[in-house]
Image (cartoon, rainbow, N blue to C red):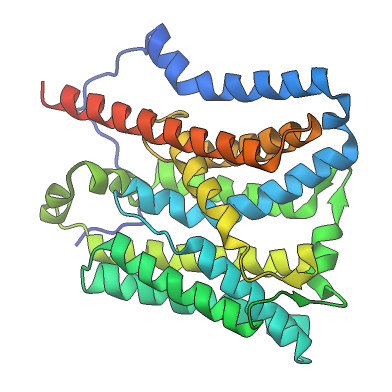
Length: 336
């Protein structure tokens, strides 16, 4: 059986790759150029966009969102889906706040919040990877369960917190305008990039989406990999929920609603960066920063909430369309 965590072996017999042409380079790096242009435009129209306080706020929000979407990135890269991630984050957020309000310390409450992520990650993993049930149906069901539990904890309302404990201290720590949590998330994404690009585990993720039957025939433990990915998604979503409890000084039962569109948009739109239709961690991180900056800049320009929602939905459609087109072209090229 193949070891899914070993270094990817060198392909001695593989033909040399052709240098990418101008069109391919534009496709790979065009998204990064778009981010720079949009941010430059906001800076020109509203100089307060790059004020230290605003930059710090955007980086803090981006860090928590990027953490929540990390597991989702690789799940979609395998050709599966998880639509329970935002509800798991909401449940973790509410359970953490509920425990704090009940008199438990932030340390115990945070562990409790993380425990919900482990529980739902294992539940999704057992049903999808273990029993091979359809991922969309299963994660809709588990997401609805998590959302219902989150609402029940607060009886449909939020839970206010008088203090934020060590989580608030962590979120308040900074290096200049750079939140310390952004450094941690950046290092985590760097580690995940290494796993994605340098280990066979990462290569198998993309192979599963292209031809799962061939991967299984090669002896790769596909179900074990999926199990790990769903547990990872539950854990990072719950960790984001704990951080949101400290950031918002409250438990919010319905916070998952806004993160649903953002998560799918970030993963699919980020899939157009570098890998041409393949969700990847660098693309997701860039797309999260882009979304947070775009919505922040739109708010500074006086756009209404409904107008910002239209932008979110439009970007999701663009992301889905681009990924589908890129995957179709890639599969067509593979059969020629």
